Amino acid sequence: MNILSAICVVGALGLITSAVQASIVTKKVEYKQGDAILEGYLAYDDSKSGLRPGVMIVHDWNGLDGYEESRARQLAELGYIAFSVDIYGKGIRPSNNQESGAQAGKYRGDIPLFRARLQAGLDELKKQKDVDPKKVAAIGYCFGGGGVLELARSGADVAGVVSFHGSYPTPLPAKPGDIRGKVMVVHAAQDPSTSREVFDKFLDEMRDAKVDYQIVLYNLNVHPFTVVGGPSYDADADRRSWAAMLAFFHEIFGR
View (cartoon, rainbow, N blue to C red):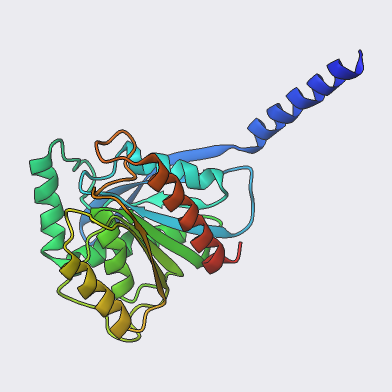
């Protein structure tokens, strides 16, 4: 065997070893909030052992689907234990905008219930094997972005939350001491679904509640800019916002 052949063999073996080592396990997980049965999606790398940070993912108004599942797998590949939670309930998966709006409106109109569903998902994540309960964060998209802000406002024990193009109004704004972790908001500067007045009111809330927060703005006039394949998708903003989230995780998790 010549040197070039040997290098090729070693390289191939390295690729095979990497593929074996990166063993991503995914599974549906049933859990409950009160009498409601919920079904989330768990993803983790089975080749790793020991305590790891956990990341909770809250779905957009369409309910838990392939989008949040793909984000969970992405996070698992990076060494996190990721759990896409289910706010609406097992088997409740809207099939059109009218159904999505009705489901989202149910929880936006009942913030205590919304927060209870969010807390149930967080509790389930913390129960999972190898999740470090002191290193848990929550991220969410659109409806879910507003959800992780409600989770933070509720005083939940999370190191931080990241809201991607979320919703900001709440009937139960945070007071000093309510929000225990750090907050990151990723937002389109000209998001047509959020007026400047609404966004400024949210910033005032964060200021008055003395929250450690950071805002990442993109010069876009769309709403769900991270939804791959959607009409508002922006590849640059998606890539940059994911990198910003990972830097945030490095800060709050120390890894």
